Amino acid sequence: MTEQALSKETTSHPYIVINKDVCGGSPIIEGTRTRVIDIAIEYELLGRSADEIIRSHPHVSLYQIHDALSFYYENRDELDRKIKQDREFITLLKVNFPSKMV
Picture 1 (tube, helix red, strand yellow):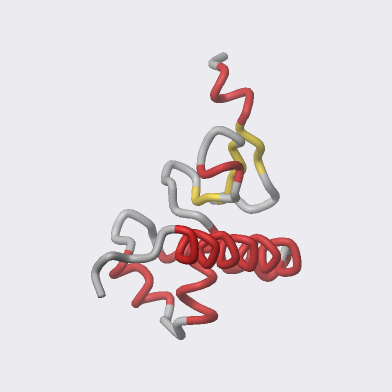
Picture 2 (cartoon, one colour):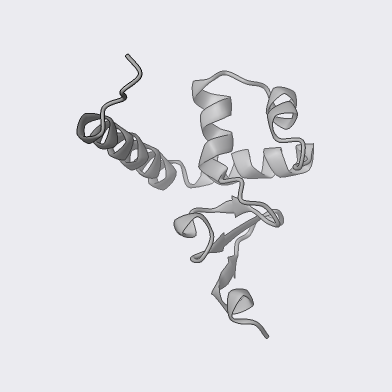
């Protein structure tokens, strides 16, 4: 058994895994580096349908998109905190490293 297999945690969702060595341990669609929160952001905040999300991520199936959204809704508080942390980090980077393309 490989070390990577040992670090992979399964979930109650057939297409979602957590691997501490991939995407910082954020839940992902198995076999990809597509984070559940990225799918949730596209659906919830950008208002994209599942079909539109597939066009942006042709390597995932409709089943995987719906499973990612289901995982998100079941773990919404925790994942929303992660989204907020990511946004705060991006804001901090923008302050400390302003764009030179003005």
